[in-house]
Length: 310
Image (cartoon, rainbow, N blue to C red; front, top):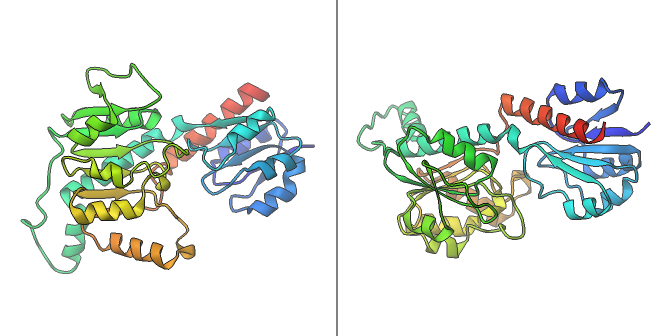
């Protein structure tokens, strides 16, 4: 009997759903590539997350493979073009964690604007600094959203009531503007936005999207937020933008390299510098990892796969 490998953390609802269909589930969230490769000839489906590469070699080895499931949105670690050329479906569940990511972005933004973490740490040291930690409201500002898919739209909803002017840019969408959101261009966002948040997939086109040229084009020293993929931002370019005052503050839930134990001397120096800045906040790729999102991603993915295959 063919099997299904779940090669990442998922909610029990996914496993229970397929076990109810009589499927054998191999649930190994920490499985490595070579172990998957060994099991590949026996599997009809595989569920991946942000740590599992599904490449041509693995796809060729999985001779019974029907589908590749992605918990969440990003498909950058999956060779989707090659898989689909062999009749293998690639299915994701971006609807499942878009709310969680949008809420996390708001958390990063409000922390940065109101200096919540910095002032808390100072109080731990016995300091009570009100003037130094005076906050900035986002009320009345212009908010630029780059990438207006599930998460970009969810973020726009969260901003309702903050009385901000929302500019949204998405190269592959049109007609999404409404009374709250203005369909815009990248150049207009660079010129007018006080806050910029990235919500694009990682592709050849978006790799280092936020680079030296992008930061050089900023006019209003915005707060910069990236909670999509680390390699959308050129870390060195961001550091230079912070040093030159092109960016007022930065909130990052993702990094170019998220395996800290593998860091080169240069990568370590970059991260050390960022962590010392009072206007930088970094979290460990947890925006879309809430308890509710884990359930929703697993449940939605299971339903999509079953509707198509079982």
